[in-house]
Image (tube, helix red, strand yellow):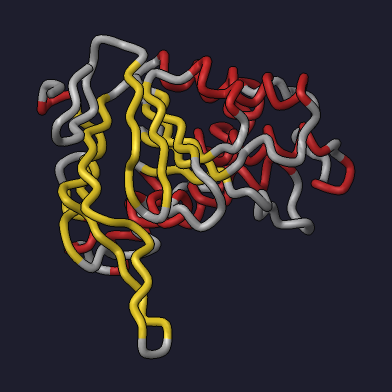
Length: 243
């Protein structure tokens, strides 16, 4: 078990079920996991195995039916909607599979938007956005709109938006699914560097090559964690498993 002070995310016997007519669908079952700072976690499994549900629960977009999800020691489900939104603006960044970039905003404006929504001035938000874009190799392209960028560049804008504001956790849902292999590797390297500087990333992927850069590989099937592979001496707490 990792040092409590270094834990960014904890799932404690988390279950999420949904009603489907007269039956109940178990999207995630009795999942326990500790994610320390500095760790890149890949989550793998077939469609419908619970991968996206896991991300939604960590990010406060959904709440567990049973169990508890904590981020920086705070029970996500116990937060008010306003506090959950603040968590997503300040602590947890998302890289969505469909990017969710606003087509009418420039790259800089897309990245700056979360900071402005959090009350930052236009000037400070723009400065932070330019710095984040430079970190992902897009210096000089701040004024371009999404349609003027390649697919890989759009994905980098999405990563910059997730990084901006000093967030500690990034949740990435198939961040390289629509990219060629070289561009996909570049995006994975960005996420790897984020973790190497003390953040943590939970990345859903179907690509087994991405497991090679991960510290922890979690495999899901039918909502159940079937395997956890530890690639470091740190431990993610899954009952009955050791590093």
